[in-house]
Length: 386
Image 1: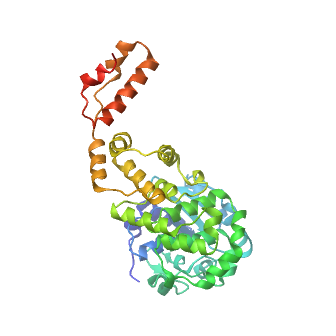
Image 2 (image 1 turned 90 degrees about the vertical axis):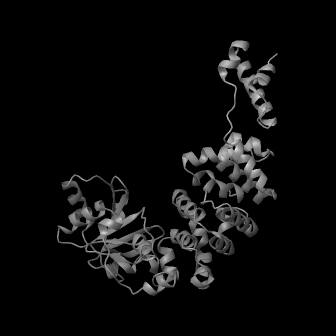
Image 3 (image 1 turned 135 degrees about the vertical axis):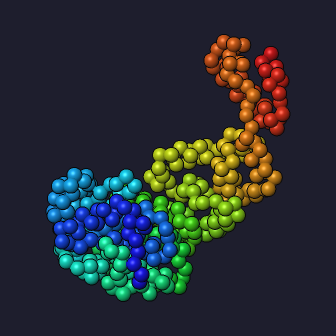
């Protein structure tokens, strides 16, 4: 495999941190998902993980000496997290798990990446990139990546019982990499179904993070289908409808839309949606939820919600209620989203001299203006006060 430019691809801060760690005489590599995505042709990397032959104590000392702040909440797993201006970098010591129990493990530090690679989850995640940009495949897994095969490293049941979150990561990679039947092993699904209830022992925040990534994949259809086959969908998300998922994906494709968590949560009627959302998404979720039980015309939607939210609303209604989105409705929404209400607070309040009455009158005038197709003039609207 050809060498890559670490600084150009992952950022100068990654190269500088690797240089610092290597100054101790120990090794340091970029590892895991970032290298997988690089080999798959991606150009942007949000999460970059490093691994080093430094012990976590040596790592802490080096970071302290160089006044680099870090988060040590995962120190028991041999990991520290450094925050730069652009990203968070998790740094983990080479290790192997010598005794595991669910999410926890007793670990032993090792000196080579072959041993470190053997304790990772999937073959597609066991790639390393050295400081000089050399891509290393210590376990010979490149064929799995080239053929997009999702395989556990070693014994699947052992990998799963080491960390039950790997069950959800399994479906996440199916969704994110848009895998199909030929890319997965049915035996793995049988093992997953056997241990599915153990997900209940995991913290919901970690579970929610994985579910969120599944639902935000460009095409989660196959992943959700498999989750339903092992009864995981019902446990975590509610009632499964392949028709709804398929219809939603087709509508998103028709209107060239990027995945929206809120749109998908409402269209698929996902249970317990709130923990899956960020603060801004919760506000949008509540805005659309409040409108779901009512039928609104395109003029109202376009003016009140704007073009993007109106389209989300109509897509949700089509998936859930069979509403058919018409081209003329989209055009009306676009035009309505650009309309400006001609009445201002200062036009009405001097005539009512009561704040509550002013608000009520303006609201009534706005409703009348929308129902007129935005044709009612300012004079006619003010005439409603008499």
